[in-house]
Length: 493
Image (cartoon, rainbow, N blue to C red):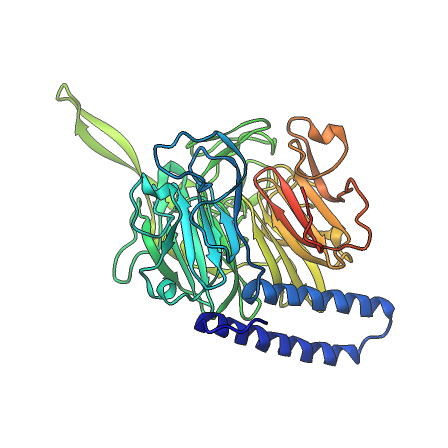
């Protein structure tokens, strides 16, 4: 590795070398136990997968940032001035104001965040919920700016960033997690961790990064729309967050605030509350009553009656007549305790699960975990398009094995809004399931591209050209698109 006088880069180099030495020692021990060629190949692939994880944390490649697509929310960072007439859709364009040693970029709902090799963090985009983590005017929020006034940022301690819908999460080199912005839920609820000694109230956002409590150091973070996840040093998985209620329909999506609805078709409209569809993978332990949900399942009911209550107030109208008005208030102590405070995710299978990878979509979560020496893919959450991969469209409220992928040694997962991707350990195969009508699964069947099309069991993605001996080393899922990176740095999308 290159010699440098930067203390933070030297510290990262030390961590990197320490982890590599530990991994090499484990490999030497396991090699003596290999009984055949197949085991040798799998062990080699497992070693490469672990090396990738270590490099992603401490030694990522550096480069410049290109942004493309719609700039309706000013999240591309491609304008020179606030009053500049921009394009509605941009071709690949260099983001203005970023250094050339960027090692990670994360795109949120309406903002973006970048991390450099030297530990500097930059944010830009819409800041109405304070997701940028810095003091900035509305006009200046569209320009790239550095978070630098807080110790973890001024001392450049950040090694990973993740952008959610209206919040941003940061991981420090010593395993602490910080966040800023807000977590939203139905009825325009907005919540964030209160400062020590202060109560949590509806309408909160946090303009500057504050620490989120964990029982031990964290190795990896993942951000969804309003739900986040973290892999801890012990390889356990913790989740936290809320969810902005959405109407799920075959062809359109819009915010909606009705408290409940009686439905039987999973592709019809669905009204839910915080964690109601299992996206936290731990709703069974929250103390909510078990009821039959809109999909005909007996499941925890985390809707309005659990997270809050209606009450009546009297007020005089403009004619002076006394009128009763029904309002709604959240149980903020319960929301802080059960939703915003990170807690262990739950698995449907027994035993100890070592979590190796995690991805969070809009309303579902994907995990790769090892139990009893066997590595499997797991999923939990909403399943209206079969994105959980279980051959049906029923919700799961705990992480459940994706049985059709058993034996495939899945090493990485990626979650879009309503679709999922799985990368095999050899790097030769990618599977996909979930919503398909925008071509996000990469499948060739035309019927899956019809409005509302989906696949509820993961299918092998057929690539349009022969990749030869080149391995896939990374997969990513956007809202309605997917991408995979080859070992030679080519991108398939």
